Image (cartoon, rainbow, N blue to C red; front, side):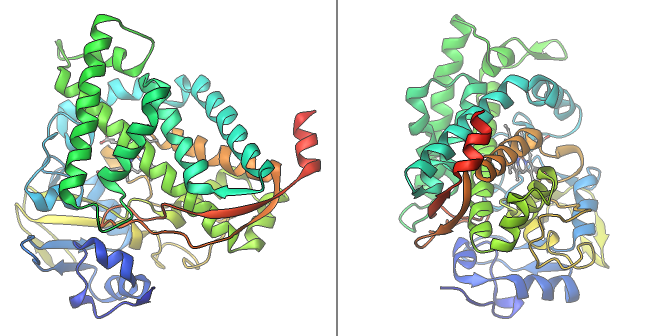
Length: 413
Ligand code: HEM
């Protein structure tokens, strides 16, 4: 059950339970107004860290790779745990020249130009899943639709065989978005290792028998004349599967959850009163599936008069920046026609999300399939929240669909 947030100094953003047990809207507003650079004190053996809550400050920090680094981790779990094992090798936790070069390599497979076929496959898959669910009257949207779109897409890119996809999905959920307290940090760590081991085997296979997939492309790539090592490749596959699955899945679930509760906005979408691209951005702003990313200070700087010293951890909260009233008109309103919409869901600056185009394709195909195949939908049971201090959203969402027979015929013609 949601309860009102307590005073800022008693909220521990390092604790996943904080997000399951509290409605933090008021807390974030208070921080933005009175403490835009807030200190989250050490707790339960975890070090303390800075919390940045205003939209403009978050953008400025993302842009500033002179004072901040990603190489000591970019999410609380690694930042507080003393570093990221992928530092200097996995794109998101690599800076400088190597980041630039690695990004160019991965951009080759994730840029709009080369994703035509992938986008067509996303469309076919999404439409089939939504159609089947509408025909059967309803489903657990999280399990039967949202779980099957991003994982299929990213598996197609990486060349993961169909028989292994459910296994990988299970591991990614345990790695980051568990929905029970029974999955602790040790289980999550084991799941992360399982994924790494899985890709170790795949890299070995592809070295012997190259295919038309991202792993084979990475095997053939080099930086400054040195081929990528197996470890480099495995770590970046891991990051694509984690980055590409969880975030898009949670955004889609949140989109349907929110639309089910706001029939006025659903009608605007259904009747073509809002452009799909515009709606997708509001779905992203609202969901903000990654609540934060973080950096470590490498050179002393200051923000709002607060000195930030080398070694200190600075966390940037999309959960707050995307509701900042300094930037968004009526930030607490879900407005599918919102323009401009400078949301931070994909971050900003040199590490801006490399999969943003693909994510937008997935979300827009979902909205279009819903628009074409159903006249509306409602939530028929409780949605289970995940437990995390990094991701937010639901792991289950029971819904009932009302079929749109005329819309279907129109599409089938
Ligand atoms: C980076 C969010 C989908 C791959 C990021 C960052 C954010 C983000 C905020 C910046 C991290 C930082 O600055 O430390 C999201 C959201 C998504 C999504 C909200 C979906 C709704 C995807 C997809 C893929 C992907 C589909 C791949 C297929 C990546 C990669 C990076 C990244 C490789 C690292 C980029 C770099 O460091 O240069 N993502 N992402 N993401 N994302 Fe996404």
